Image 1 (spheres, rainbow, N blue to C red):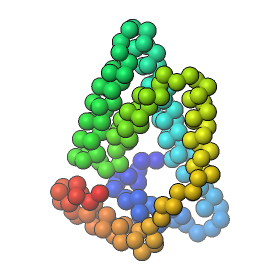
Image 2 (image 1 turned 135 degrees about the vertical axis):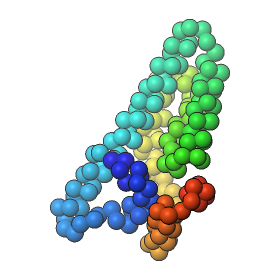
Image 3 (image 1 turned 120 degrees about the vertical axis):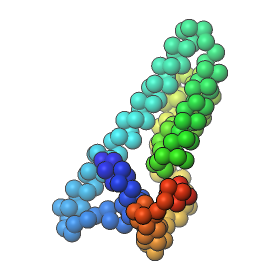
Image 4 (image 1 turned 90 degrees about the vertical axis):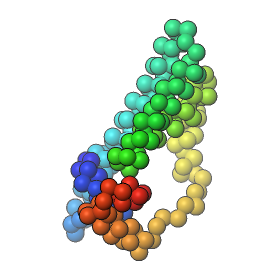
Length: 165
């Protein structure tokens, strides 16, 4: 599923050519692949990240380690690796996002499980209830970004690929 990003196809190009073949069946297949294959990885990795943080929290507590300091150090190191990866290697980095999310989780770890369950359910439901007026780029903007990305990723120098973010 990472084949598109591995060959530096921009997100704008992917959005513009999401349905590559005509016909209702092809559109359904595109949607099923996106939903059950591409998005499945996001869900599984997020779940594993959350469970991993919970296990680290419990084990550090059992050993008598200062959990806040321990996790803060771990997430700051992850953030450093993520930023290096993001800025020097690949602009599709996920480590930085996990580090920031982990830093935001630290104050929540001492809350009871029931409160965490309610907060999690609220976070899922609120995205459908509270409108976020974030404009999506127009077709012209996406085409301009895709053309620029194709040029930079196809024949640009290392500095150009790093500058194109």
